[in-house]
Structures are given as structure tokens and as C-alpha cells.
Length: 535
Image 1 (cartoon, rainbow, N blue to C red):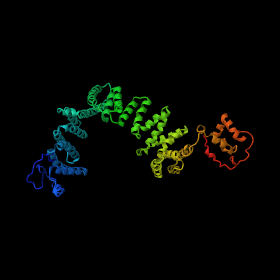
Image 2: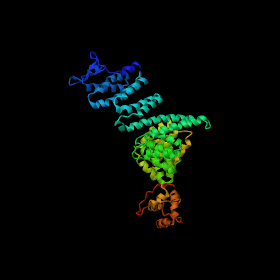
Image 3: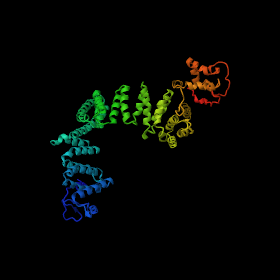
Image 4: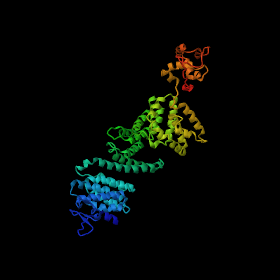
């Protein structure tokens, strides 16, 4: 053992005659704290009693750890070991766990520490306070795994698995299951390596048969160690993934599906987005119906609306035949782009640009307005500022192109982001920019167009009846598809006939005056012809 190990782990002895040491009323010896304790004064008296000196020592250890002063922390730690002799029974029982956590942290990072030192410290701490045996054994095994000593870690867990201590055993059942499960993970690692080796062998080879038998043996051990843990409510992601992979490999799809469904939907388990991700990926591998996939991702959307699977969720919703799902598909895209981590996600912007064009062509303006109303106060700054226009154009012109289209649709041609991108001269994107301008002019929700069906259904015909006499027969207003369509219906035509001059009904006879007047004889302000949009 190294000199550092002996110094860190040596038993504490008394030095009655040493001048530089500090002795408490209980005979404790603190060789490195004299200069610090002398400065701690309360009411003019030095803190020399046991509790005060140990508290001061703990504070010095914590400060040294924060500053990564590992040697100084080790020196203070040697003195702090004497808390095991505290007269307060509660503090004495808590001391082993505190010492283990502090000591293991120091030994993990100390430049002179090694595996042998850590093993010696762990073995000694396991036997101080029986309730800490399993915790220390488990953390000791993880330390060994970190250093690639898998066989030693497995041996350590195997010893811990057999630990029993009277009535205390039942109270630590969950820890015993956890130790068994981690042992199962180590066995899964061995199984996984053999699986890789098996994939390289010829099925007719004798070695293939031997490797298959070895894999089966390892999988049985793993199943036995993990299966009991995953039925206990908790978050067991690495264990569930490993167990499901083995079940699928051996064709037990039903058991894998049952395990994942229970892990995701059982109310006794804490909310865990990974549980729904694992279930979705499993169902996807099984080629489950689209409705089933949507139901799983719908729950994930409620938990993490910015997850990368939301783009798959959007596409699944678009392929659905239900209008409710088409409406949700738009909500999902807006939800993804609400998060700062997704602002540069070009796929999300492409999907939104394409889907906005589609649903506006299908006259679902209300869907867009509903999503935009809750965002119009902060999205312009969050996504469509002049700063972002310059930054996006410089970093990714394709991203800027997609965002510019969305900005134009939502904010109109006056949006600074849209204007900046449209002013750029880029040979490759020139045609795209031209298409953007045309689409924004047609579909922007800032001045939405009016379709024939909307105009009629919203009861706007009486207003139209008043407008018709104001325009000449050959005007653009009179020849637009909206007017021509309405006049083809006998009911509307007959209803309008009494209040219209002949030329509006296609009969001979020009209007008496080209200047419209109201019934009171005052000129009426003509609306611009662009007020009625081509549908």
C-alpha cells in the first residue's frame, strides 16, 4: 500500500504531549486544525468541545472539496474520522455514511489515490454500521466498473447480494433488489458482447452453437436478476431497456409489450417520458397501427412538447383521416418551436411552412389564428427580429428561407425578418424567394382573403347587395369569381333584383350615374376593389 493510503487510512492515535495538536474534552486529537480553530471564537471563548471542532472540520472539508484541494481535504478527513466516537447517538449513527461520501469523493479525485486505496477504504467502511453495507457495496461496484474491472465488480455485488442481518434485512429489500439488478446489468453486458460475436459467426459453425448456449445462460441470469426490480414502482430505464432487448431477441414479444405498457401506464410508477419513448419505439418495430402510435406520442407530447419525436408525431397526425388530428398537427409544430432549443431546427420550420400553406389553402384560417393569438406578443421578438434575420441568413440560408415564409404568413410583408430576407440577392434561392413573395401575398393571415363559402355562410350578402350598384359593369369587382358565383344562384339573383340596376343583372341599360349616392343623396365612399379577394 502507498504512503498516501497508510496516511489516509491509519488509525487515529492520541498525542498527549504534541504542541501543535488540539485536544478536545473527550481526548480527541486534531493535528491539522489548530491554526483554524484558534480563530473561531464565541463570546470570547474558543470552541474546543467535540461538536464544535467536528463541525468546523466538516466545514473545512467542504470548502476544500469545492476548491478541488484534494490533499488538504484528505488531511481534514483524517481528523473528521473521530466523529465515529460522537457521544450523540444520532450523529454517531449518521457519521459512517457522511464519512463514506466525503472519503470516496476525495479518493476518486486525489492525484495519489489508486484502486487499492479505494478498495481498502470501502472494505473498512462496509463494516462500520450495518445499514450502510449495501449502499457502499453498490457504489464500490460502480467505481470498479468505471475502471473497467467488471469481474471484481460482479464479485463485489455477488457478496452484497447474500447480505443478511436479522430484521434489518427486510427493511433493505429494495437495496437488495437494486444490487441484484446491477449484477444483471453486468451480465447483460457480457450477453451483449457475445451477441456481437455471434453475428460474425456462420450458423453452420460449431462455435455458433456454443456461443448460442452461452448467451442463453447469460440471458437467464440477467432475467432472474432484473425481473423483480422492474415490477417495483420507480424509474428503472437502463434495466428496462436491457431486459426488453433480451426478450425481443428470444422472440418473447408479448412479455416485452406487457413490461413496457406497465412501465408507461401504471399509475404507481412516477411520470417518466422515457417509458413512453421505449413503448413507442417497440410498437414502431412491431409495425403497430397508426392509431396506437398516435396514442403513445400524444402522452409524450403532454410531458415534453419539444421532444424530437414530436416531428414524427406531426407526420402521423397529418396522415390520419380525422380532422381533429390535422388540427393537433399544427399545434404540435407551434409547440416544438416554442422552445429555445428548437429555434434552429430547420426540419420543424420546413414542416410548419409547408403545413401553413396547406391548411390555409383548405380554408382553416381559424386554426392558424388560434395558435398565433397566444404567441403574437412574443414570437416576433423570439423568432423574427432583425437580429435573427441577419444571423440566420449568415449561418443557414435555407433555414432563413423557411422562417421568412412563416414570418410573412403570420406577420405580413411588413415583418422586418421577411423584408430583410427578401432583400437579399442569392442566385440559388432567387426563385424560392420569388415564390415566397407570391405565396405570402396570397395566404398571409394579416389581411386574410375571403372565400365564397365563408362569405355566404357568415351572412355578408346583405352588405354585398349594397355594394353592387356602386360599380360599373366591366369593373374588376363585377367580374371577380365571388360575384359571378353568387349571381349564378337564382335565389340570390332574385333577392338582389329589386335593388339593382339592370346592368348588374346582365340586362341592357347603363347606370344613371357613375358616382354612387346613398339614399340620402350624399356621395358614398367607394371601397377599393381589393377588398374582395379572388378566391
